[in-house]
Image 1 (cartoon, rainbow, N blue to C red):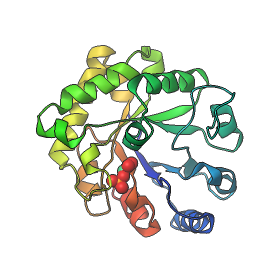
Image 2: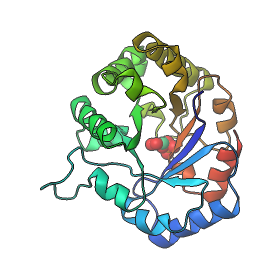
Image 3: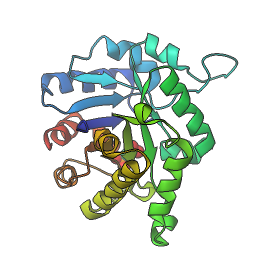
Length: 248
Ligand code: PGA
């Protein structure tokens, strides 16, 4: 059975004092449902926040490098990230793909690095507007998954997390309808079944991301193949983020 997950991607927002306050409010609000809550703050805050979270909150990084160490100015390796208290990272967010030229090949290297170093990840996929308008979103997302993720073995794929984030819905206020989200999630589940088997397909958590907020979360989360959300803007406000978690 796929885990229910609500994750907050803070991107390049919040100063340290604001980040600490947000975590404190989340703690006070006692997130103790069966929903797994993961925060992706700016990496420089991980160490500080790791001393302030409680058992209901996990910390992750928005990006990491595939190499274990070396001359990669500005980058972070998985073992460095683990050493300050984070055990999960995003791979392939559309902003990394668009602004930092991360190709499917680069993302495949990150997937392999994460698997070999036992580092969890949320693999992000999703089509830009032009592709959606051309009606080619299924082929596009399938290719992203095939080129970066579906080379994993069944054992390596079990219990993984995939976030479907249509690029046209990210930060735009334009959410995919519950039908649009469900239809892509159903397709991803079917591909997992075809490529692996039913056990694997049912074990993978499929999150929706893209202008998800406290007003639309309930409807999105009620879709049979939506196992949670990757929340950007709405995760920066503690009350709103708590509402989203409670929508489950
Ligand atoms: P958004 O971002 O919720 O602000 O649209 C989602 C994401 O980029 O993960």
